[in-house]
Amino acid sequence: MAEMLFHGDFLNQIPYLVAALLPALTFHEWGHAYMAKFFGDDTAQRAGRLTLNPMAHLDMMGTLAIFLIGFGWAKPVPINPTRMKGRWAEFWVASAGPLMNLALALLFSLLFHLHAYVWFGAANAEIVIQVIQISLFLNLALCFFNLIPIGPLDGRTIFAKLLPLRQSMSFELWNARYGSMLLLAIIVSEFILPIGILRFLVGTPTMFLAKLLM
Image (cartoon, rainbow, N blue to C red; front, side):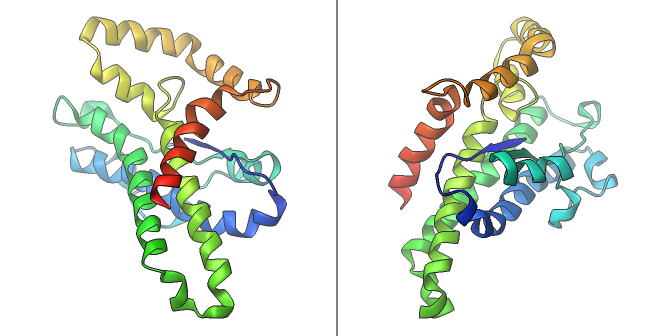
């Protein structure tokens, strides 16, 4: 799981990013763990990942990378598909993370329209508004990024489970060989090409939906 930020003035937004990032990553990973448990796999629970404690999910290097290059990741939730019951179990376990981020984005949109920032007083209203806006944007970006169907991202499993069995097996084999390399190339191209692929795949739908929600 990863996150790519698409806004400027990054250094000044670091405090707001921290406030937005912790619940975004935590609920994403908790969603995977909860859904795996729901379908009969307690691997994540036994590993201490069925929790809303951010420290259980954060990866040291991935978190540091957020503040250095605006890109980072959390520790993937361990699952054991052989312990799950139901044909669509893996599909829903993979979908749970992005769905949690979408739910959080909708929640922050609701808080914005309910003028929840006034609950914190006039002196803090501007800070709360920025946290709400960044939280909404970040959760949408995290959702769409993880839906990319390559590498270790959630979209890979989601896409594979929608394919017929033979095509699914071929795709999984291809992805195991080339998926991570292709994902890395796409990420690197973001810093080289004038129009990044991620800005199109993630930034465009994120900005479109964020504008609708705000």
